Length: 166
Image 1 (tube, one colour):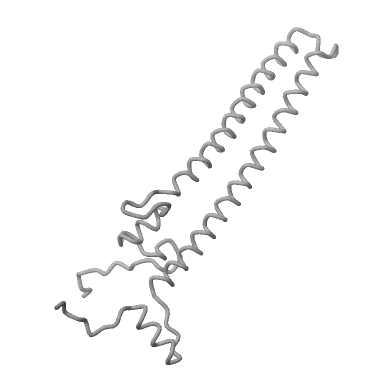
Image 2 (cartoon, rainbow, N blue to C red; image 1 turned 135 degrees about the horizontal axis):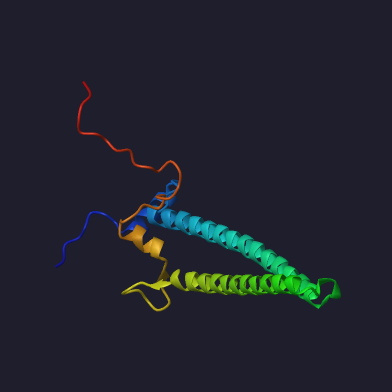
């Protein structure tokens, strides 16, 4: 016959402790919950930051478009019919068009970066059941490469010197 362990299974142990009035919780479950909450907050903060950056870029683009329109109106105005003025305005218009083009490209790149980040946050875990996904951070924590609180203030490791002072 197979050998029996003196220890009851963890769920049974937790049930027995609950019957005795002891509030017992699985450390793994607690860590998982804390990690999930921290990751959700971090994700929320990243999205808020990205939204603020996007608003700033859109405001800058709007200003560039207004400037470009103003230069185009000046080009059509009889008050700026002098050839030197026309040449100067054409240079300003070209510069404004380049800036608008660059800003539109930046906004498009930012949109692609956000989409790529969303895709990178989901990494299938090998050996997991169907639909089980794990973030890269969770995988590093699970494999012991980092701790759940590695990026939080106060978790820094102090270097200990092997030499004595004296």
